[in-house]
Amino acid sequence: MGFRDVMHEKYKEILESYMEDQNEQALYLSQKFSRKSIEYKISPEEIISIHKTALMELEAERSDSVMPSFDILLEVMMGYGLAYREHQSLRTIQQELKSEIEVAANMQQTLLGTQIPDVDCLDIGAISVPARQMSGDYYHFVQDEQGAVSVAIADIIGKGIPAALCMSMIKYSMDSLPEGRHEPYQVLESLNRVVEQNVDPTMFITMFYGMYNTINHTFYYSSAGHEPGFFYNHETKEFEELYAKGLLLGVDKKTKYRQFEKRVDVGDVILLMSDGVTECRTEEGFIEVDTLIGYIEKYIHLEAQEIANKVYKELEYLQDFQLRDDFTLIILKRIK
Image (cartoon, rainbow, N blue to C red; front, side, top):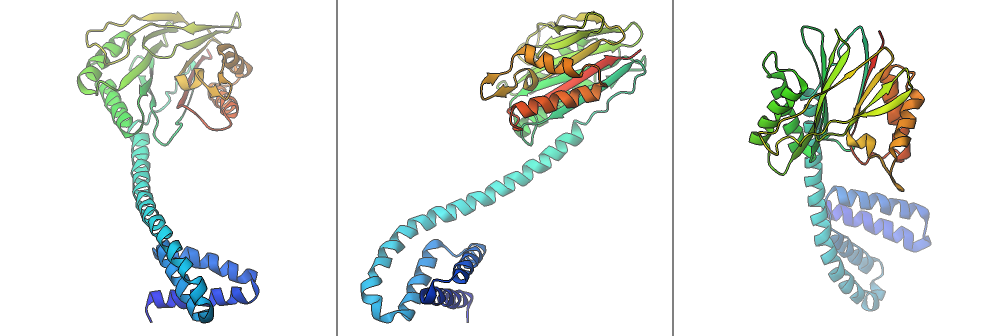
């Protein structure tokens, strides 16, 4: 007896049982039969055919009046069956793509991994959470031989695997910069030329690059169209924007970037972020800057990593735990 014959007999048993007393057990067995049919790729129109044959065998005397209706049902289900098989094919393709994206996401974490520097005078915290599997945000720390700590935070306007590949190229370019060219404006000008020559013109990149000089405790920074950061003055208990105007990377290879500086005293805090933080979206729209600062101020007395974690949790809650954009927040807090 072939597989189709076995399925036919099984279905006939279920149908006969249910026709006798409409019992719950038969309904349960019919659900199992449905799952088994899907597993063995039995089409919906085949199920109709099995039902028709089983009913003819069980109720032969009623077949003349009932059976013609199954011809209509069978025609309807043939179209449904074609759509069903197409759906199954798309599910297979979707699963393959999902597997590829999982591999790419793991590669992204490996290729773009960075370590938070251990610096006596600074408490550093960072959190970066993608809205989907692949992140369009990127951050990277560099510490030179003199102890200066540089930090880059970037956002690619574009998602998925192309964005991840682009980020990898940027990281490699930063790591390959010649000695003595780690001033923020120089870094951005070098990266701008790389991006302009190698990245698709439809993909735009914003970046904020800062360097903390641990000798004179001054933060030097430049921006290529990136979200401005915030500076918290411990003495006055006030926040101000670390605004730095500059063109996005890759638009014009001759672009020059302006460098700014900020003196940092003990207790002062530098906060760098992507627009997934400042443009946190709820059902009512974007949150106000004052609301964001309120959350930061609420936790400003904590260690840097705790500040980053707590602010993320607050904004995640506001969005009903469904991030609408990649979230990256970096905290630099002078402790001595």
